[in-house]
Image 1 (tube, rainbow, N blue to C red):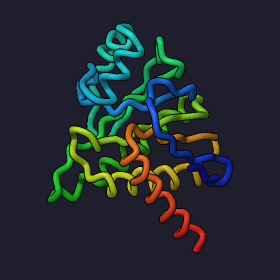
Image 2 (image 1 turned 90 degrees about the horizontal axis):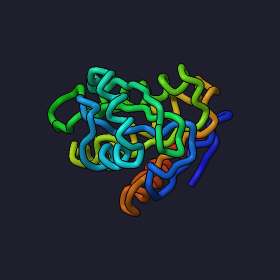
Image 3 (image 1 turned 30 degrees about the horizontal axis):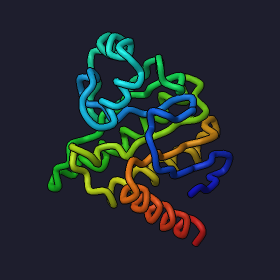
Image 4 (image 1 turned 180 degrees about the vertical axis):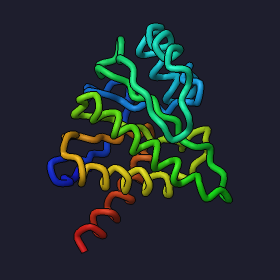
Length: 181
């Protein structure tokens, strides 16, 4: 599924983020940036050991922030590492931290001349963020950013499973309806 927001294409795809031929891919990292499970582990394995060397020099990353490294063996030129929040249902800061992870990734992309970018579903794996809410936050934050910044021409959400894809598709359909109302 895809839609246009001014000059930017927002796109959903099911697949493996490590295979994307975008300028950058976003890594849903942990605070250490030294690799882990899920998307983080897959990106580190695909990029090769140089990625670990590069992330060691970054001295970690706070939740809601983002940092950039080369992509090394990936097709993407860069990896933007962001740390989403661990879901806590009664913590009012959690949705803002998830939105910040997306927004800061987009800002770092623009600062580094990235025009095409692929995101995973940040915080929805072991960090336990409810998928429906995470999809709404991801898409709304991205939409609001690209409305203001035409520098990025493509934002692709690369979603690992059909269930995640369908949840994002539903959230994007609702968002398009709202914007067109």
